Image 1: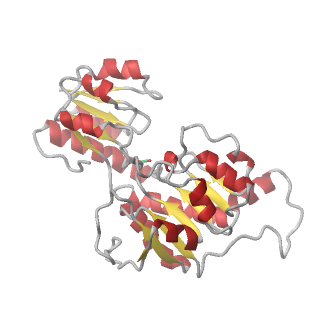
Image 2: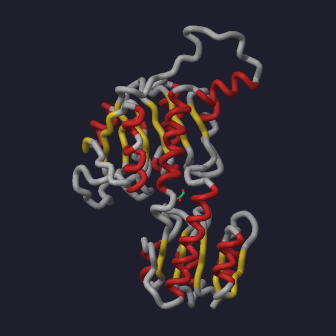
Length: 322
Ligand code: GLV
């Protein structure tokens, strides 16, 4: 059987596939759509990344396809309904990246509130003249409220780290999220102290809002002008989920109007493009989609995608179906 892999995976992981299958590895940047349709034609398995658009056309070009294994937790780039209608299994890579994304999120929270990247730029540009008692003051986290939008695995893992910084946690779940019991554990057996609130209360009362919802029709542009205007003027917005959850033009407007204190983004509406106004704000951090980017996690994600392909093409149930 044949497996198309759209991006280079660690060689040890590819070797697991090559033991069993004829592997067609695309060793470059994003596969152009027509080449993707051409190369998937004979494939029984497809391993893809979030920059591949797996739409009905790609799925229908592959009559033998049995599994689409995303090396990602988010799968808004895949037409899952269409795949299901064709009896094709879609899998993602949950759990293995939860800790890495949570750690990165805290990195962004600390960087934006304490102006770390802004200070770094100043020093590199030779603009630092002297230490000052009131120089580059930031905001302290202790005693403040962290608001989590989207309380799935990653949202809970970010929340679980809040007590280390003396923050309280409020959260709001989207419609799509399965109801978890209040006080559900955040992993590692730690009981999570977090207050469920309405979307509006989350906006109005939080000092830091961190977004961890998948991209769905309901969550697209959920952070728009209206939402930004409801936030505290001293609040910070963090997005490590999917770019289109935030209306970037609205965010640029909110920054211009000083409606919020700062923002840190890891994801964008049209990656790798960024709204042209955002780089002009010193209090906006722009990271290049690095949430899960650790050696350990990216290897674990690739391994899990391969395990899903091995299972399904071997006649077994998938490990992590979406
Ligand atoms: C990364 O953005 C992912 O969905 O895994």
